[in-house]
Figure 1: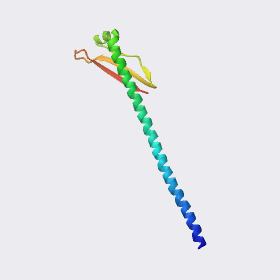
Figure 2: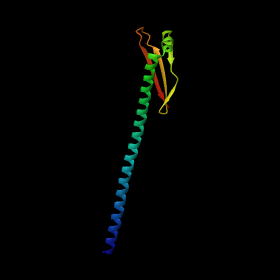
Figure 3: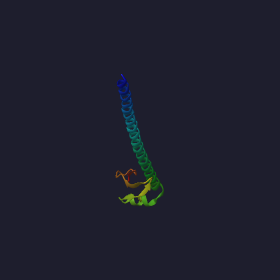
Figure 4: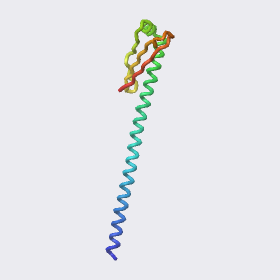
Length: 112
């Protein structure tokens, strides 16, 4: 009878330890997955902000820089200097869309 009581206590301690380890593993896995997803979301948001900044720069250059029109009107393309926004490099190129309606093709590349 005494041996059965000792065995029951050991069994309960081992079972509680195993359940605790499983629960801790699930919590850790969930936390790491959430952190990874948050990092990815932040990178996507930073890239989107850099892209929008590049587009705004292109629109400003078209509106206020006569060199853009001089270059594009002669069939060329105008490339802005590479800028760094939030640690990302942004390249902007402006060219005529070649159908004579005065509209432009703006290309914005964002990379690390």
